[in-house]
Image (cartoon, rainbow, N blue to C red; front, side, top):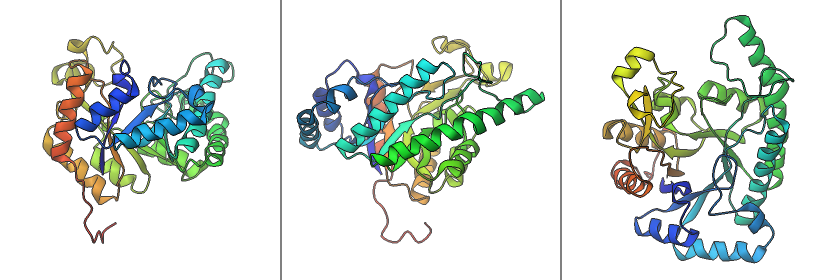
Length: 321
């Protein structure tokens, strides 16, 4: 496994300064945003798709600082019921695939998306329970009429540009939010679909990341290192379905934290060991969304922590894989 960083929190810095800084900290890979919900400050698709010279210069810049691209990230909702929003996010996805081909990147990170509840919907509708029966009917319509048809077409587009892995982040609010939904879409459209495994979204759902990793063996295509802290008092009062503002940290049942500030080192050592056990040898890409730390402090603490808990060498005889 290689130590990586999603560069989004350093959006105010030019790409070269980011690469120089991360290299000095021992970071080996970067995950670069290309649009959608993920800012594209370090790699604007329209700029680089229009100029092969800039692509060559970008590759040289990465080489200068001995950094590889682990993935291009275009988190969006390409099945949004608002056609303009869906079209915009789909176009970002296509441009990201085109850019991946030019840069020699084989992994795209994004969301599955979430449709509305019928053709006339204006906003997404995330269903969390099967009853009353209306909810089950909504789910079947979303999956069979919108989600699966969209991704069947999208994976063919990705393949046409040499993309080998579409790593969907299992994120509540979208149709793919846990291992079962990830595997359902993968079975429906093909094994180019896999997981961008981010434990932070699973911790608060009550999912054991190690159990989830084992269930997804062979389908983990990228990994986000981000933590979650559950507040025992707020959780005891209101449970985990918390739609309060992320800014109101004292009142929330859970908040995103830098790795090691939500779960202890033993938990993260188990996660890293399970990644090794299932044969994952990709990037461990730090995503900073900690509201209690600056980006610089959060990244530096996460890097130091992961250097201790990560497994970076593969045994010569992994007979269990």
